[in-house]
Image 1 (cartoon, helix red, strand yellow):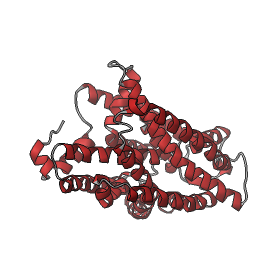
Image 2 (tube, helix red, strand yellow; image 1 turned 90 degrees about the vertical axis):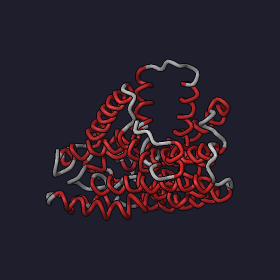
Image 3 (cartoon, one colour; image 1 turned 135 degrees about the vertical axis):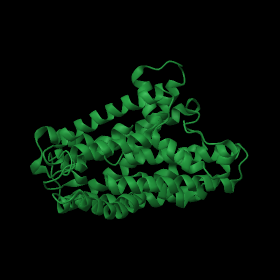
Image 4 (cartoon, helix red, strand yellow; image 1 turned 60 degrees about the vertical axis):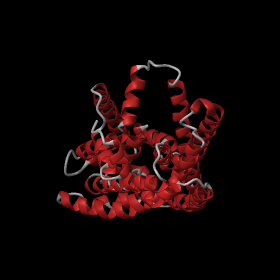
Length: 377
């Protein structure tokens, strides 16, 4: 699934040209191949990957809280543990957003856990359902704006291009605070709530018991994401043109069905898990993907290190010359490298370094950490 994140972020590192819808280069700078790749990414990836990971974050956090409660922890202790995890995830996101990529999502996830730990651990669902409804209403407005205008955060890169590297760091700090942190938190809080609701029904814990619902969710979610994403994708790729009203409607359709696509991808993950549960021997590609999935935070941070080294004007400089297709190729290649690295860690029985650090910070000094000890592996 980290492949989707790599593909969603790569084109945002391109600079030195006009910026169009969702941060893609303006249509007049796209080659034929770039247009096809833009169409595919806007349809299947953009606005679909982050809601998927937000659903999984909510699910995993509720799962963590449930396990602590089942182990005898008080509700207050479980809430504190989720809040600590969110706080340190926010710090990870701040470092990542300021130093590498202002579109960081980890900080937004951490902020949501920090603010909503009580809802994650609680038993009532009314507030969570209300958050989902509010999110859908907000997404309608955000989608309309996204369909009409350029991405200002992507365009501003030209203001610091050619200066010292610390100018980009300063710009990253501002862009991350208002775009990556607050902006993305406003876009995905409903998906986190959906994940918590799904965890209470154990959809991914017991996928074999929910196969019909998972299949229906995957088909409807991904199908609607494709149909709803195509209108805006075709405009971004230069295959069609729309007036301002049409662009607003296309933006709404892309955003709302992107949520459905994110939920559909999460359901697809549950179906894969159910399939894997039927056998104890996985093919090599599946084992490698599982290894990366268990070290997703490490992989997420490392993909930005690679992108900065390759694309940044003060490092590799490829962002000035690459097209969307070339950027997608770099994204896919980076994902393959991450697969190999995390597979080697898996073979040695080691966790990802980011996961180890987050675990230490979360549990050290907490009642849960004192009762169980914290392993570095």
